[in-house]
Image (cartoon, rainbow, N blue to C red; front, side):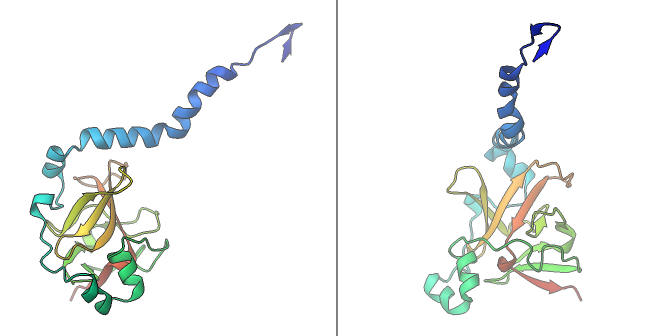
Length: 185
């Protein structure tokens, strides 16, 4: 660019240095903060999820029996760790009641724990104490959540996303297929 007979250099290299921060900064910062702030010892003090040591699995009947009890779509999500399409029936559902595991009927969440986050899947800020267990996901970044009673895949838990949820500031992102809603009487 010319200005007064001189060529002015635009600070493109400086802007390029900011590009990774703009693109990856928030995500990277969230991952680093999540790994640092929510280590296993601190996590157990803040969440109602069961630890690996508290794993139950007493209602897990094995894949052969699950194939007979579940629909193909349920088996895919609950037993093969599949993911539902976005915006299913429970995403914006707000009736008072309880959300049960679609496989074994264990009470996992209440309608008071649910919030609308516009991610396309039902979101809960916490779980019924001991009903949900965490496990590291195979991608090494996310944390899977499972029904603690039958080991069925529910979805993933995310922390510190800024939704201003009450402590423990979690977002349980749950597949619609993993849930059965029981209205409150």
